[in-house]
Length: 313
Image 1 (cartoon, one colour):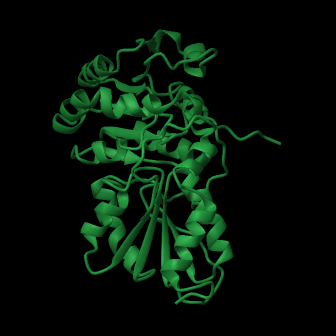
Image 2: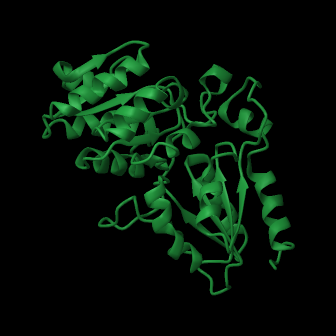
């Protein structure tokens, strides 16, 4: 039986495989390479550990892209979206350089690393920079697909990953892009009165569980959450339900729910998120999320509140 890889390990492995046939791919790391990095082992001449130099690293990647290369640069999500924000805005957003910024440790997946290494604001920051694709894949297979799509695209990418969690991705047809909204089969004819929209790994796992529990709930998984992708989701979402609950390991401010609410002003859009407090609690990923009020039981209560009880509206 094959052991599932976490998103960040799947990224390293998939990129190393792609580089076997695509010589333009270059892997840059901001001191996150780790021992036995697959890309460094198989393509040492195209692997560079830049150290703790995130802002300069994005600029270097932009220069490589201008020279015709396809640079992937990886660092903590908090540093990718915040410390390097000016370079991301100018090099990737304004100039549209073909840079792929891969950001593990998204949300509070760093757990014990603490507040400085957590990222509950990154999606809001990157969404405010136009023309950057934003992907939050769920599970190994979807992560691999996103990496392949990013490598084949000429667009700048921000790819948000977690740390060590490994999940089976939701089944997706082989010819369907991860840019397509993935609607989970409910297996029932009961009309959906509430649609859960999952963004990221922890959120998608929660939505999978509760969709099975309540037949009046639909589940749409959004892998890409940049403005272009969210606009493309509007009509498919409207066909599912008249009210929506976005589940996202992020703050409500600037999150996916707030943008969808602007795109669908005639519909009710709610958010299950990590609240407004700073994640100062030390613990595992799951423990920090629980301290922030993000989890199965709190989401269950929110669903029942919005749906008017265990049998729906």
